[in-house]
Amino acid sequence: MKRKKHLTTTLQHMGQTLGLSDRDITNAKRTARSMLGITIAAAVVIIIGKIVTSQLDAVGLYYTGVSIKDFGLLSRFF
Amino acid sequence: MSLKHIPLSVAWELTLSCNMRCMHCGSSAGDTRSQELTTNEALNLCSQLQELRAKYINLTGGEALLRKDWYVIAKEIKDRGMQVSVLSNGLLLNQKTIAQLRSVGVYAIAISLDGGTAQTHDTIRGIPGSFEKCLSGLEALKKENLPATIITTVHKGNLSELPLIRDLIIGKTKAWQIQIAVPIGRFPREYILSKEEFYAVALFIAAMKKRYSARELAVMGAHSIGYHSQVLRNTMVSPVWNGCQAGISVLGIESDGSIKGCLSLPESFVEGNIRQRPLADIWEDPSSFSYNRDFSRTDLKDQCTTCRFGKTCKGGCTTVSASLTGAPHNDPYCLYHFESQILNSE
Image 1 (cartoon, each protein chain N blue to C red):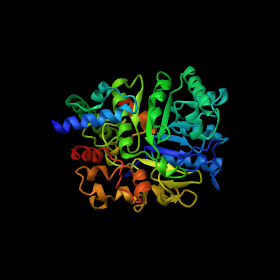
Image 2 (spheres, rainbow over the protein chains, first blue to last red):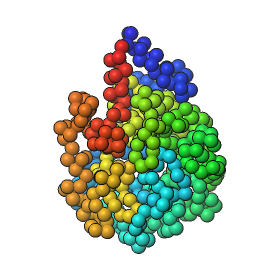
Image 3 (cartoon, one colour):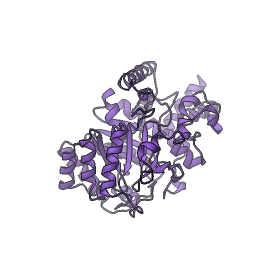
Image 4 (cartoon, each protein chain N blue to C red):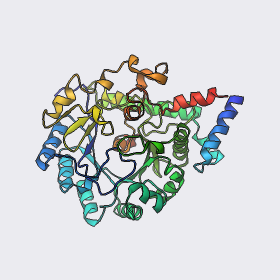
């Protein structure tokens, strides 16, 4: 409990410099629901990657580009 | 051609020539690089990329639009069935270039915006008036219904202006990529974010991803921002982080034909030059990109050696790790590691 409070206080302190409200801080934290969502999304990316590139060594499985140059590829999963 | 790896995403520096002098530029862009590829060599490279089954080609610089034949190269890429995007500082966006971008059918035009005020942006970019030019370019792209995106490189000089930048671009852009500046090129080391500031940026991205839908403003952390947080929502565009993709699904091409796994990497990571060997030879060479292709857990260093994500994470972003520690597989700007420190400090 003490650790959780310490974490929240630290995040609130950090967020203040960037204009984040307490609600923003709460929303920024991951939840069981968001973790489930990301797990499903990851599975979709991996499965589609495997299907699309099945003739290869599962490039799709490895593919995890994270910038705008990859946006065209990954935005379809939003 | 049977390929073990495919360069799905390629960053191609068309020229090192630049009409700005940004303080954080990792390439120290300004003058043209010695012996840049000719038009014919560039067109031939398009054919080689097609042969390697490259999918997304990101034309960058320097300032990509300064190269007189950028349109010819972009069109060749598109005609060969690959997708093309252009990264620009916005200074050369005018009716003619916007018409050309439309004609090519780019999937994204990424504009660099580094300040929420003219004073900050112009100081960072070294060109008075560039802020207004950038915003008017963004408006023009929006008016033409072209897919504009924004890239912001964060350091101590502009960190506090992230909310201002957000307010400026909301409704005018498809996506906002936020990345941190690292000490490569002419970026002054004293301006790099502290780890706490770095974490604050990730916190900001996570909050904005929740506040706005991907259709309103797709906010994403790039390079080292995002992997394995145990506290924050995902800050990346991808739902998973399987380690640096340089030389695996990502390729970087310098304007003189030098090949790297990722364009951001230091010069010591050049694997060859297409003037000496065909691109496929360099890409398929078993000794190429060994830092990633032959990675094993024993390559991890310092804080990463005992990390439970080490095997798949590979120690984070190679560029950040190499620029800050001199070696890959040891990215000190790691959310997971920082969280461990926060949680253990109480």
